[in-house]
Length: 299
Image 1 (tube, rainbow, N blue to C red):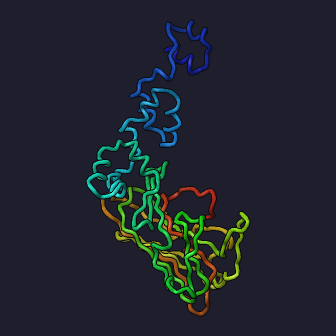
Image 2 (cartoon, one colour):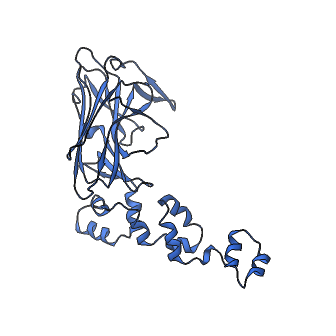
Image 3 (cartoon, helix red, strand yellow):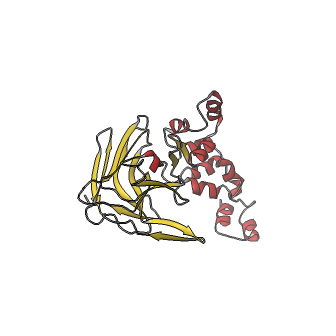
């Protein structure tokens, strides 16, 4: 015991030898004990500690360690991975829990590639993104009002750009078994048309108008009766902003929950325009955003 403590306290080899018959280090920790340590860490911390020595490296591959980090409905989530044929099902059955976690931590497309989800690495919940093409946008097929604009600033490589319209309304829905937790839903939008020239980003506010006259109304409802309603003015031309539409709670991960959500400004006394719609994002509540501003709407 004295030798073990001496190593942790940084005693040199001679002092350790004098303290006991043999020096003991972290490398001598039984894998089961190392696994118990890993159970108390987040997945990124597990991966870092696995580099320390063979005991933690071996423990970091244990199924029970990674199963504890997976959502309880991970089997449902894996049905979206690898196809629906016999070979896909066999691959999913053979996969270890670490492999399952690693696959779900990467974006998993569904809905004809216009939607995707992935595991949040610290909360054991999921994140989800729905492209503008997965939403019902009033007038989207009329090029006098809207156009699809290719861009690398969207995870879906395309945004919907509004030039001018009287009736602005964006509606969407998703039916999904969400892991247990509280989630927030956001609309990712940008005032002004942006482009790159000679490697530099430029933004023009030529078509931006009408958003300061009346607030935009956000709505969110769930199939189990949860509702959120808020409104705010759109602002900050030239940058992407996440507008918070509302929160919802998932308590039954084995039952699909249908979400319906919308963003609208339907006062026809004036036109509005110059707006990019990228996507709808669903994240665990409280998740921080380092690169984009979040606007909490007024009730």
